[in-house]
Amino acid sequence: MLHKATTLQTYQLDSLDGEMGRVKDFYFDDQTWSIRYLIADTGTWLSDRKVLISPHALLAAISKEKNILVSLTKAQIEESPSLDTDKPVSRQFEKNYHGFYGWPGYWAGTFPMAADYPLVGTAPAMVAIPETSPILTEEEQESWNPHLRSTKEVLADKIEAKDGSIGHVDDFIIDEENWIIRYLVIDTVNWWPGKKVLISPKWIERISWETSTVFVNLTRDAIRSSPEYTVEALVSREYETGLYRHYNIPSYWES
Image (cartoon, rainbow, N blue to C red; front, side, top):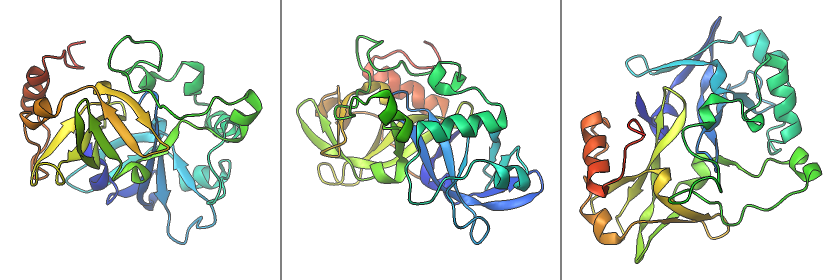
């Protein structure tokens, strides 16, 4: 099922032995657009650390009850490797974290949620290329993972089509089945007031994190005539089919 990121950020988190907090944010991989971690707001419980939950532990997002089921106990979470709230996520932390739970590391190419979108440099056409992601030494990567991005931090980033600006990032559509970002919700208020549209990460040409700009491999006219997205409606397969048909691009479920 597809969910808006901002909607999921209102959901309660239910561990195997009771409520453990609420969804605060998501970290996604800017090369594959996979959700790598859910960031939990645990209130006064574990308030001195940043609590990350891997999609490996996410069982289901239940819209009716507005909660996400987590296959961990509070004790497991409390005993897991600690990450200070003011520190970025390092590769060393990720190795310790995944090792604690016995989960495979996605960086080794064994994490199934990385397969939906090709890694940078492996596809010839519309692939999201992080323009300003630095080339780091192995030692530097151990101290900081440059490809983890917060969904909240990307909100309001500018969107540039082939022939000019079209708006800004307003939200994300997350696929619960494999915890991947299926679409960016684009608000065209500064160009075409009152309309929102969806853009697949596959249609992104490059990203400049330095200037907070996402460049898409589409024209403004093509985007203008694309099916409108309304926040009240769920993204149905019928809507998605019309969207991909409009751009004459094979859908992800077909390819």
